[in-house]
Image (cartoon, rainbow, N blue to C red; front, top):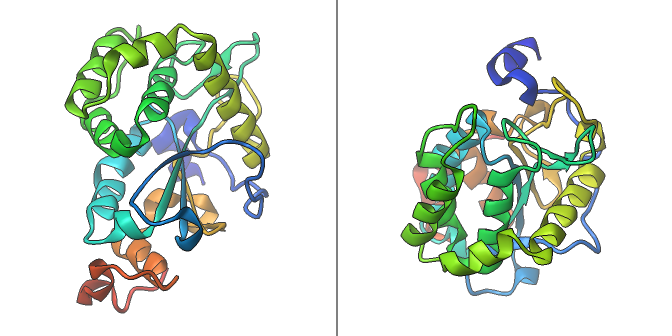
Length: 241
């Protein structure tokens, strides 16, 4: 655990006991193919917009997985943000100002055009972590919106609206209920991201999603019975998660 803590600074932490918590009643942000969600295995991904480990995972394993032949159409990808209420009654996120402006832009983009969100995430993850004093957030969000063909005017309207407030409240509620061990506010308190569940099963020892290789995710998803060309790759045939 200490090695991960050193790497992730205040992002690390022990595995939450909530691995069997199944989401109910809270709206989800989705991106996926044309098949009905009920027929697909669920890839439930929780991340933080400015988390270095999340950006690395998103820019490598997640990008490759979503782009693997047939996976996007066969799997129900669900995306959540690591956000919680801070000590001073403002939202708290990984390496962000109070109020989590990066996460708010991300949630508004997700809400505006879910089908294009992977392109937005790829753009965001390819750029460097934004350091203190965390300037340039809006310009980067706009550049990624334009690249992913998501209407920037709609995102801008969402940012300053009651709907934007509702998106943040919804994600904070989801995060604290899904990950009660990571719901404690304050400097140095872990968020436990990135975190992945496939059909409710936590991926990676102690929830370290970034430690599972690409082939391990393909093998796990293909083991649910999906029909995707990526499942026939010889590289994934003998992988054990």
